[in-house]
Length: 439
Image: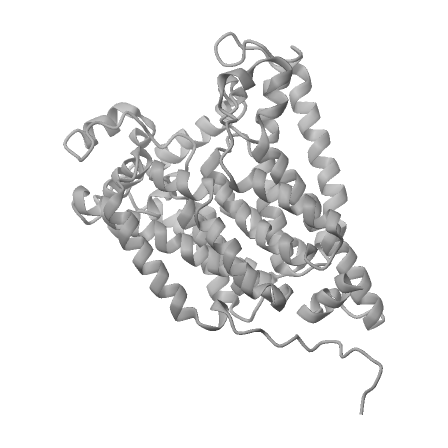
């Protein structure tokens, strides 16, 4: 008989909730997907990916994928008319994402893609919900409310409106991180490998697996990614397409247009503050462009020095969520819809701070609002001088959430390890994290 002691390693009983009824998630997702797919038409980004997928099905992946004239010719007879766009900064493998609808006529493919995007958003949010209740099962009921807010968030709506692919990428990485913490390493690695080669942001959680020693899903993800990239070379002129993509990334990663406030990242922030350009940034705070790259380097070193010792000791869902946020902070061209990838950090951060102080909860709330709610940061008056300091809410929200993940997970590990008298941190159970924060 045990008296006067806490039982460590036994998770608290999970209250009845939506988590216990996954079929309700499926029904809600299908109904919402049908409604949104029938009521909306994805924007120009979908037609770019769709045209690239059809080209790949026809046996060609050439450098014309990065030329607006080629896309205009391909899309002239499609719904919505000519699309004067191209793949820009996406690799040729991004066409994998729309391959499931590439065989359809464009008028049907549009609706099918909207359906897939909504289902993907539901799948991603459900995976985030699972991660949160794995850390603290008592968040289950209120977590449903957070799930609803996430599905209605500005990044998800921006993705639907632009016809982007980040709802799908979000689903792939969120499910991969969630399944990677269990014994479904092959599934997790396969999904992450697809996400990493389709959109380079998907590679960031793989760094979390590397740091935390999750070798099996990392190996599977690497193998899947290499196989998918190799498959592109079966298409005609794929080498030229990859060369064109590398040239674009190398020359345009910190181009003058990065300074516009639509890009919500640290490179964009520093470019706006420190680099004058008559077209893109006529009124910086200082004109010192030579400082941009050194300051980015110093910031990257500082974050690595602060984060790596903590991240390598925490659960994989915390590490993966942090790496996604880090990717958003340090990638140059990060727009509203990219921040769908910050939703895992919002859920995991909430589970970590729920039993902490009110101050930690308030900080989390500010970060979540900055990441998920509509903000007028593209307004012209916020692009001039000191007012531009108010034009980067997504960046500030990502920094806040990243700091919460680091500080919260560090305290949890230290307390739980002390209770276990030196046990391996990777073996910590959910209840030990809860007990650590409760104390």
